[in-house]
Length: 247
Image (cartoon, rainbow, N blue to C red; front, side):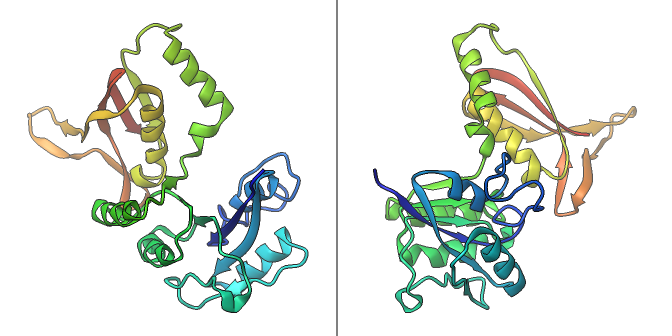
């Protein structure tokens, strides 16, 4: 049975360093990429890369007994090559801050991994995302954005029930979310795509006051001003009315 070598770029909370009491080698909870790769019988964690020496040291001590971490001062430099005696990874996981995704993904391409797993949000904007997907498609390298709910057994069971028609036809759905449309709301959007198919409409809603004057889009800056939680309406193949509301 083939095993796959995995490199993780970014040793922060999702990459490697959740609190020790909730995510550690052998823990019931699997909350980091390091833990998930270590637990899977067909993956081998071969490299960690981070610009923060402290995080890199903590992550390597936590997840490896005999390991020589690689550190690079530029977030745009991949840092895995034969000069470090590390094997070329089959899978590369990108878990750096979103603002660095585009640069890191551009640089990783030269190493021709077999698969990219990228944290969400995928890039800072649509143009960056389109450029990266076009580049990788030229080399037939798949990119998977880490929308983990698709792989959770409970959600998979719900999808089976929806597809079977046991509950009838979905008429409408209301989603409550916090901490930004791009940062957290994107999970709900992808979950709706998983349950109900692709969307043919997605737009923000305007509030209308009693005089009929259009106000600004209803928004809550509960994470940061560049990624507010915004009220939206969408239509999907199997559910024509879905509302996303900040709470």
